[in-house]
Image 1 (tube, rainbow, N blue to C red):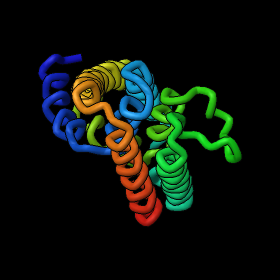
Image 2: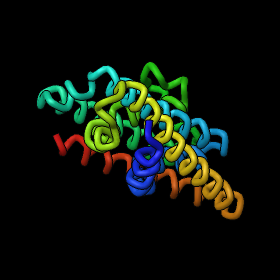
Image 3: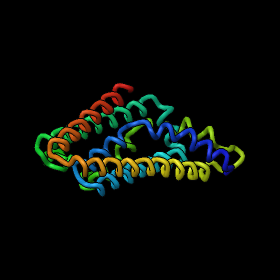
Image 4: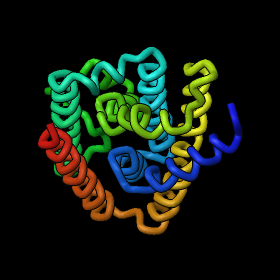
Length: 208
């Protein structure tokens, strides 16, 4: 793959990565409510979710979803519902004064994965993550060469950019937490994260 295309992709995807979104919110909450390692796991889960979309794009499944209004609507609704559920349980965890964002009564199959599972599924069910590989990535592909290896290369670059940013943010939040580590601060940040997740979920579902 031509390197000028790779550098062009990095220049295009970096501003999108820096925009605060679900992954940044989840990472922030995991560090505040738990520990630095929880934020790291959420960051790796988020990039693994991106790799899922990259795989779908390589085999053409994402194109099928995005071309089908019904399939795209289902993805948006599922993603929105998941984020709303995650936001509500996050808010409730602040009220209960516990560190976990998962309730005892309502559990999902990936609950035991903690921050990693939340980061993973928040991106797997995020249609905007899929759209990156259907609208932005094709602009940096060369039709005269095999498509799958090119998508794989751009996916590696994309996940590297996202991971560096999220891990940097983990360090920032961890430093802030060590300076202001009070129960009131953790509860306030947890509630803020819950409210933001619900807002993202409503926006995602409404976009359908």
